Amino acid sequence: QLQLQESGPGLVKPSETLSLTCTVSGGSISSSNYYWGWIRQPPGKGLEWIGNISYSGSTYYNPSLKSRVTISVDTSKNQFSLKLSSVTAADTAVYYCARLDGYIAAYWGQGTLVTVSS
Amino acid sequence: EIVLTQSPGTLSLSPGERATLSCRASQSVSSNYLAWYQQKPGQAPRLLIYGASSRATGIPDRFSGSGSGTDFTLTISRLEPEDFAVYYCQQYSISPPTFGQGTKVEIK
Image 1 (cartoon, rainbow over the protein chains, first blue to last red):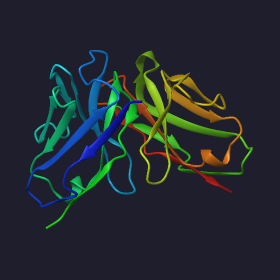
Image 2: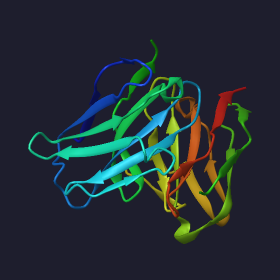
Image 3: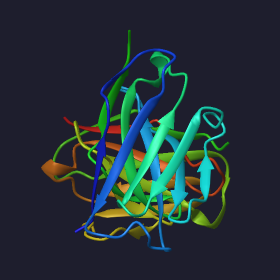
Protein backbone atom coordinates (compact mmCIF):
# COMPACT_ATOMS: atom_id res chain seq x y z
CA GLN A 1 0.00 0.00 0.00
CA LEU A 2 1.40 3.36 -1.03
CA GLN A 3 2.34 5.65 1.83
CA LEU A 4 3.80 9.15 1.87
CA GLN A 5 5.38 10.78 4.90
CA GLU A 6 6.45 14.40 5.24
CA SER A 7 9.37 15.35 7.44
CA GLY A 8 11.20 18.53 8.35
CA PRO A 9 11.34 21.35 10.88
CA GLY A 10 8.05 22.46 12.36
CA LEU A 11 9.32 25.96 13.07
CA VAL A 12 11.09 28.27 10.63
CA LYS A 13 12.21 31.85 11.21
CA PRO A 14 10.99 34.66 8.95
CA SER A 15 13.20 35.26 5.88
CA GLU A 16 14.70 31.78 6.14
CA THR A 17 14.12 28.75 3.92
CA LEU A 18 11.52 26.11 4.65
CA SER A 19 12.72 22.61 3.75
CA LEU A 20 10.58 19.49 3.72
CA THR A 21 11.07 15.96 2.46
CA CYS A 22 8.45 13.41 1.44
CA THR A 23 9.41 9.75 1.74
CA VAL A 24 7.44 7.35 -0.43
CA SER A 25 6.98 3.71 0.59
CA GLY A 26 5.01 0.87 -0.92
CA GLY A 27 5.74 2.09 -4.42
CA SER A 28 8.50 3.49 -6.61
CA ILE A 29 8.88 7.20 -7.17
CA SER A 30 10.47 6.33 -10.50
CA SER A 31 7.19 5.35 -12.11
CA SER A 32 6.65 7.33 -15.28
CA ASN A 33 2.90 7.21 -14.72
CA TYR A 34 2.83 9.72 -11.90
CA TYR A 35 3.90 13.12 -10.71
CA TRP A 36 4.70 14.01 -7.13
CA GLY A 37 3.45 17.22 -5.61
CA TRP A 38 3.21 19.60 -2.70
CA ILE A 39 -0.03 21.24 -1.54
CA ARG A 40 -0.46 23.45 1.51
CA GLN A 41 -3.29 24.55 3.78
CA PRO A 42 -3.05 27.54 6.13
CA PRO A 43 -4.74 26.90 9.48
CA GLY A 44 -8.53 27.02 9.07
CA LYS A 45 -8.29 27.84 5.37
CA GLY A 46 -8.41 26.16 1.97
CA LEU A 47 -5.90 24.31 -0.16
CA GLU A 48 -3.18 25.80 -2.37
CA TRP A 49 -1.17 24.00 -5.04
CA ILE A 50 2.55 24.63 -4.60
CA GLY A 51 4.07 22.58 -7.39
CA ASN A 52 4.99 19.15 -8.65
CA ILE A 53 7.79 17.08 -10.15
CA SER A 54 8.20 13.98 -12.29
CA TYR A 55 10.64 11.19 -11.54
CA SER A 56 12.91 12.62 -14.24
CA GLY A 57 12.97 16.03 -12.57
CA SER A 58 10.54 17.95 -14.75
CA THR A 59 8.85 20.57 -12.57
CA TYR A 60 5.78 22.81 -12.46
CA TYR A 61 5.44 25.63 -9.94
CA ASN A 62 2.42 27.74 -9.07
CA PRO A 63 3.19 31.19 -10.52
CA SER A 64 2.21 32.77 -7.21
CA LEU A 65 5.13 31.00 -5.51
CA LYS A 66 7.45 30.28 -8.42
CA SER A 67 10.17 32.77 -7.47
CA ARG A 68 10.59 31.14 -4.06
CA VAL A 69 9.97 27.42 -4.67
CA THR A 70 12.28 24.56 -5.60
CA ILE A 71 11.09 20.95 -5.79
CA SER A 72 13.61 18.16 -6.32
CA VAL A 73 13.56 14.37 -6.47
CA ASP A 74 15.99 11.72 -5.21
CA THR A 75 15.04 8.44 -6.82
CA SER A 76 17.76 6.54 -4.95
CA LYS A 77 16.05 7.36 -1.65
CA ASN A 78 12.49 7.28 -3.03
CA GLN A 79 12.04 10.85 -1.82
CA PHE A 80 11.16 14.26 -3.14
CA SER A 81 11.70 17.60 -1.45
CA LEU A 82 10.35 21.12 -1.17
CA LYS A 83 12.29 24.29 -0.49
CA LEU A 84 10.48 27.59 0.00
CA SER A 85 12.71 30.60 0.50
CA SER A 86 12.19 33.96 2.19
CA VAL A 87 9.28 32.73 4.26
CA THR A 88 6.87 34.98 6.13
CA ALA A 89 4.02 34.34 8.53
CA ALA A 90 1.76 33.90 5.49
CA ASP A 91 3.63 30.68 4.73
CA THR A 92 2.47 29.11 8.00
CA ALA A 93 0.46 26.08 6.92
CA VAL A 94 0.07 22.33 6.93
CA TYR A 95 2.18 21.09 4.05
CA TYR A 96 1.06 17.93 2.28
CA CYS A 97 2.93 15.80 -0.20
CA ALA A 98 0.92 13.78 -2.67
CA ARG A 99 1.13 11.35 -5.54
CA LEU A 100 -0.49 12.87 -8.57
CA ASP A 101 -2.37 11.21 -11.39
CA GLY A 102 -1.96 14.13 -13.75
CA TYR A 103 -3.03 16.94 -11.46
CA ILE A 104 -5.34 14.78 -9.35
CA ALA A 105 -4.03 14.18 -5.83
CA ALA A 106 -4.93 10.55 -5.38
CA TYR A 107 -2.68 9.74 -2.43
CA TRP A 108 -1.71 12.15 0.35
CA GLY A 109 0.72 12.22 3.20
CA GLN A 110 -0.66 12.99 6.64
CA GLY A 111 0.64 16.54 6.46
CA THR A 112 3.08 18.49 8.58
CA LEU A 113 2.48 21.86 10.22
CA VAL A 114 5.17 24.43 9.58
CA THR A 115 4.98 27.61 11.60
CA VAL A 116 6.92 30.69 10.58
CA SER A 117 7.83 32.66 13.66
CA SER A 118 10.85 34.22 15.32
CA GLU B 1 -6.32 31.28 -13.00
CA ILE B 2 -9.72 29.67 -12.56
CA VAL B 3 -11.55 30.69 -9.39
CA LEU B 4 -13.88 28.08 -7.94
CA THR B 5 -16.76 29.21 -5.74
CA GLN B 6 -18.45 26.60 -3.59
CA SER B 7 -21.90 26.91 -2.09
CA PRO B 8 -23.28 26.81 0.45
CA GLY B 9 -20.49 27.53 2.90
CA THR B 10 -22.12 25.27 5.46
CA LEU B 11 -24.81 22.63 5.00
CA SER B 12 -26.67 21.46 8.11
CA LEU B 13 -28.31 18.11 7.56
CA SER B 14 -29.31 14.96 9.44
CA PRO B 15 -28.01 11.43 8.81
CA GLY B 16 -29.99 9.80 6.03
CA GLU B 17 -30.67 13.07 4.24
CA ARG B 18 -29.45 14.00 0.77
CA ALA B 19 -26.63 16.53 0.42
CA THR B 20 -26.14 18.64 -2.69
CA LEU B 21 -22.93 20.69 -2.93
CA SER B 22 -22.22 23.18 -5.69
CA CYS B 23 -18.96 24.27 -7.32
CA ARG B 24 -19.01 27.09 -9.86
CA ALA B 25 -15.98 28.01 -11.98
CA SER B 26 -15.03 31.48 -13.18
CA GLN B 27 -14.44 30.04 -16.66
CA SER B 28 -15.21 26.80 -18.38
CA VAL B 29 -13.45 23.70 -17.06
CA SER B 30 -12.56 21.84 -20.21
CA SER B 31 -12.77 18.06 -20.47
CA ASN B 32 -14.58 18.08 -17.13
CA TYR B 33 -11.25 18.18 -15.35
CA LEU B 34 -12.86 18.61 -11.94
CA ALA B 35 -12.29 16.63 -8.76
CA TRP B 36 -13.90 16.49 -5.33
CA TYR B 37 -12.14 15.79 -2.03
CA GLN B 38 -13.37 15.10 1.48
CA GLN B 39 -11.44 16.33 4.51
CA LYS B 40 -12.09 15.43 8.13
CA PRO B 41 -10.54 17.38 11.05
CA GLY B 42 -6.85 16.68 11.48
CA GLN B 43 -6.70 14.52 8.35
CA ALA B 44 -5.45 14.93 4.82
CA PRO B 45 -8.02 15.34 2.07
CA ARG B 46 -9.28 12.17 0.39
CA LEU B 47 -10.05 11.97 -3.31
CA LEU B 48 -13.71 11.16 -3.96
CA ILE B 49 -14.46 12.08 -7.56
CA TYR B 50 -12.36 12.91 -10.64
CA GLY B 51 -13.31 13.77 -14.19
CA ALA B 52 -16.42 15.41 -12.69
CA SER B 53 -18.24 12.10 -12.29
CA SER B 54 -15.84 9.15 -11.84
CA ARG B 55 -15.59 7.74 -8.34
CA ALA B 56 -12.11 7.08 -7.00
CA THR B 57 -11.15 3.61 -5.83
CA GLY B 58 -13.07 2.49 -2.76
CA ILE B 59 -15.52 5.40 -2.70
CA PRO B 60 -19.10 4.33 -1.88
CA ASP B 61 -21.73 4.76 -4.58
CA ARG B 62 -23.73 7.16 -2.40
CA PHE B 63 -21.22 9.76 -3.62
CA SER B 64 -21.84 11.02 -7.14
CA GLY B 65 -20.56 13.91 -9.21
CA SER B 66 -22.14 15.69 -12.14
CA GLY B 67 -21.92 18.84 -14.20
CA SER B 68 -19.94 20.39 -17.00
CA GLY B 69 -18.61 23.72 -18.19
CA THR B 70 -18.76 26.03 -15.20
CA ASP B 71 -21.28 24.30 -12.93
CA PHE B 72 -20.57 21.11 -11.01
CA THR B 73 -22.35 19.23 -8.24
CA LEU B 74 -21.37 16.65 -5.63
CA THR B 75 -24.32 14.67 -4.31
CA ILE B 76 -24.33 12.40 -1.27
CA SER B 77 -27.53 10.40 -1.60
CA ARG B 78 -27.96 9.42 2.04
CA LEU B 79 -25.64 10.89 4.61
CA GLU B 80 -23.82 8.46 6.86
CA PRO B 81 -22.31 9.64 10.17
CA GLU B 82 -18.81 9.44 8.67
CA ASP B 83 -19.75 11.80 5.82
CA PHE B 84 -19.86 14.91 7.98
CA ALA B 85 -16.75 16.74 6.85
CA VAL B 86 -15.50 19.54 4.61
CA TYR B 87 -15.64 19.03 0.85
CA TYR B 88 -13.43 20.76 -1.70
CA CYS B 89 -13.66 20.92 -5.46
CA GLN B 90 -10.52 21.27 -7.59
CA GLN B 91 -10.07 22.08 -11.25
CA TYR B 92 -7.11 20.76 -13.18
CA SER B 93 -8.08 22.05 -16.60
CA ILE B 94 -5.92 25.18 -16.57
CA SER B 95 -2.72 25.72 -14.61
CA PRO B 96 -2.34 26.40 -11.82
CA PRO B 97 -4.69 23.78 -10.40
CA THR B 98 -7.03 25.55 -7.99
CA PHE B 99 -9.39 24.57 -5.21
CA GLY B 100 -12.69 25.95 -3.99
CA GLN B 101 -12.93 27.37 -0.50
CA GLY B 102 -14.84 24.34 0.78
CA THR B 103 -18.32 23.38 1.95
CA LYS B 104 -18.74 22.10 5.48
CA VAL B 105 -21.41 19.43 5.92
CA GLU B 106 -22.41 19.44 9.58
CA ILE B 107 -24.86 17.47 11.66
CA LYS B 108 -28.13 19.29 12.17
